[in-house]
Length: 239
Ligand SMILES: NC(=O)c1ccc[n+]([C@@H]2O[C@H](COP(=O)([O-])OP(=O)(O)OC[C@H]3O[C@@H](n4cnc5c(N)ncnc54)[C@H](OP(=O)(O)O)[C@@H]3O)[C@@H](O)[C@H]2O)c1
Image (cartoon, rainbow, N blue to C red; front, top):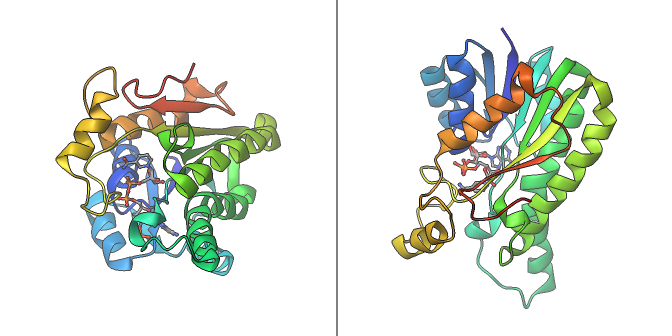
């Protein structure tokens, strides 16, 4: 039975990833900031939960006491486009800086801090899988895309740092429905626009991502490291 930690595992993609590992009989710990969301999800999953802000060094340090003593698989899934929660006021440099910090904190720092804190607990052959985004390779998503691009760059270094000790990869989804990502504001036109850019003519599901994460965590994927897996129906061709 493996020890699996999924950040942001209370909703959306993270929940599906946690459910996929739990279905394999692994011991799963989900994290996130909202305790009530985690409690409900953990009950359904038969998982443990630890509530903390993954982008806060102090909170991550404190959470360590409650996280598993050994980690086989870490899934850095916590994140999202923080601009969706903000009023745009980019004429104000302070506001602009705060908007960029928020996306870098949510999507890059969260993974860097949790990974660094748990690295001493990673077993030999351990797996670190971070959820990036098609936004890292496209245009138009500003600080969110830049933060996910930085996540890819950091993962390349992490793979080298791990060496033969384990693997580090990014799974980069395209549009995935049935998550809280768009805060309920994605219009049918917004969905159509994104689906039209795929080769297979459909949106992605949280399970599409969970299956890819399971593969990267599987015994057969041990030679797969420092890579970005694009799961987007061909909307971006990672060749
Ligand atoms: N949905 C898509 O179309 C799509 C596409 C490409 C990439 N992604 C990426 O996929 C990942 C999962 O997103 P999702 O679509 O499943 O959306 P979601 O349902 O909003 O899930 C994001 C999860 O991350 C947690 N989280 C966010 N910031 C956190 C922080 N600072 N500390 C701890 N937990 C935090 C949230 O819980 P709390 O709010 O309770 O903390 C939430 O459970 C994200 O990294 C996102 O950028 C999504």
